[in-house]
Every structure is written in structure tokens, then in C-alpha cells.
Length: 294
Image 1 (cartoon, one colour):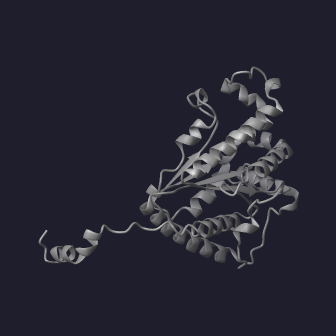
Image 2: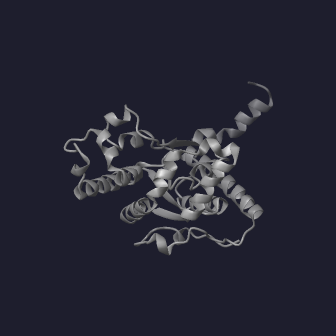
Image 3: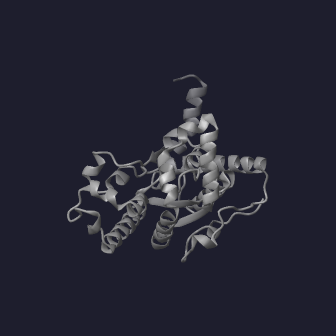
């Protein structure tokens, strides 16, 4: 199996999607990838247990990608060995009436991970410079001062949004949230095949949404917005990783590998030391329990 290095997928300079493959042969069979992911998942779960005991950091995993990119199944497979109390998944849909009464980042602040836990954003705060940029009419529901019609949304508006997102991520990183951002890079042809599969296989019919075809017709616009957003917001404290997503198993393996290798670099994350008095009396406590004194 090909050795996966996080830096090969990290965005540390200007990138063009046209230069990045959507498929990657890692020289492994389906069974080998399944086994490798299983092992990575178990190792990640051990690190999460230590993170929970350490109680100093939270981890935010952001997943973005076009419809059918494999976000849901990636969450299921990568995090399946985690203690349920240690990971919370948030799937951000169209803002509710209550959420629209606040600024667009409000609901994302509420969903940030507690110390010692992972939060997974399945779709993220970046929808606010992606969907709303391709379909700016959605912004009118936010009732913002000065935005009465689509024509009021200027380039300065988007400049401010990017600055706000950068500030949001800088703020949470400075306060103990470790941020990972993954873009599942899917080809248009693979998306077509996956949408067809949803229609042809009855058990997957429920996944199909006619709106997916509307967004597919806007593919080039979405790709341009993704490319700009990633280039403008990949920072050392909140990096983007572009993951080839035409093969779901490979994508899951790469994401899990990156998480494990990067989290292993936090050597200060350790289980807390026992209180010296308790440590000195472990033998006594053991004896009491063994002798059924308690």
C-alpha cells in the first residue's frame, strides 16, 4: 500500500482543481483498504480517549464536497470506533427560522466541540461562501442591514465574509480547537454515476433529491467558488486537505491517516497524572477491595 503523507494533500500554496486528481491508486485491494481503515480507526479511538482524559483540546473536523461526495459514509466509517460520548456530528442544512434570527456563524459556534471531544461538521460554515455565492438570493432570508436585493451583494460583502471566517477559525484555534478541513474532490462523471445509482437501486431511492440536479447544472460555478474559498482560507492553524473522492474507500483511508498522523504530533496530550496521595495508596485500595473490606 502506498504511504500516505498528509503534506501531499494539504493546501499550503495556490491550487487549481484541474491539476489535482479526483482518483488515486494507493496500490491496495478493497480488502486491504478496509483492514487498514479498521486499524486506523482503532488507533484514532485510543487517541480520542486520551484527548478526553486530557481535557484541554477539542477537535473540529470539517467536511465539504459536492452532493454524493461521500461525506455521510466517511463519517460512519472513520469514526465508528470512537466512544459515542467523544464525537458529535452536526449536519448543517438550510438555516431554520430561529437560526436566521442570528448571524450566520451563530449556529456553528454553538456546535463547536467541548474540550476532550471531536465535532464533525458535515457541511460547514463554508456554505456561506459557497451556496449563497452561487445562489445569492438565499442571502435575502438573513435580513441583513443594507441587503434588500441581490444587487446589494457586492464584492466587498464577500471580502468581509472571508475575513469573518478567517477570524472565526483563528479565534477557536487560539482557544484550543484543533481544526481540520477536508474537501472531497469528486469528478463530475463519478457524481453522475452515483446519482444514477440512487435512481436505479430502490434501497437508495430515498437519497435522491431533484435539487441535486439543479446544483449539478451549476457544477462549474460551485467548483470555482470552492477553489477560491480553499485558496483564501487554508491556514497553518486551520488547513484544507483536498482528498481524491472518486473511490470512497480510498478517501476514507486518507482522511483517517491524516487525522492520526496530525493528532499524534500533539505530544502534550496525555492522560493526567494521578494525585500523589492516591498514587501512593494504590496498594492499600487494592488490598481493601481484594479482602472485600468495602
